Amino acid sequence: MMSFMNSQDYLRKKEELKAQGPKYRTLCSICIQPNFSCYCKHIKPIDCSINFVILIHPIEAKRRIATGRMSHLCLQGSHLIKGQNFTDHPKINELIAEPGYRSVILYPGIQSVNVSQISENERKDLVFSDKKLRVFVIDGTWATARRMVRQSENINKLPRICFTPVKPSNFRVRKQPESHCYSTIEAIHHTIDLLGNYQSSDIGPRPHDHLLEIFDGMVERQLSFLNEVKLNLREASYRREGQLKKRDLDITT
Image 1 (tube, one colour):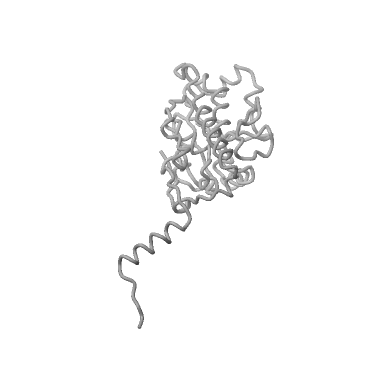
Image 2 (cartoon, rainbow, N blue to C red; image 1 turned 30 degrees about the horizontal axis):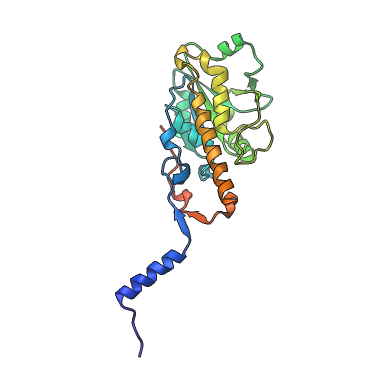
């Protein structure tokens, strides 16, 4: 005779199987960090005189440690837009054509004006007094960034600026191609260092240093966690609940 499991036995068995399964941790819907490393409560929005548009590659958007997202959360009025080819992107074309703004792209190369090496007067000339500076920043690996700029005809045509890094990156939880390569948030911070004060005297006593405070805090928490469990991120026993690709990270403001 076939025996049937009653409802109580079924529920008990179900709970046992659930307990034996993989452990999941909930991610913050804003910073995409697990609870132990969520930095949202530490954010103090910065009213920066430069308007930043952060173009985040779809692969980068899936990463928990994406400093372009972190920058967007810290900078009032900034834009975070996901994609790869922005040639026909209506929002991007609207931002480029918007009156009252002069758009440039932060991108290294021989075509770029190195704002670290020009004079103070030349920096002032770079920023029109009757227009606000809008800086487009590519957030992705070097390979994906080159592809994004090459494919996006509208972005490719923008005047280019770059800078000379003053010290190595502090992004110790992700390997950088070279010691002089900066994360997106470090690059934005240094751009404000060089050009922000020429935009307006309202920027105050270096409020943009808060970008590095948030960034360095995140790095230290990640390193502390890795040291504690003595595992790297790929070997951790926890799994994310759901897939980031199912999330709507296409944030615009």
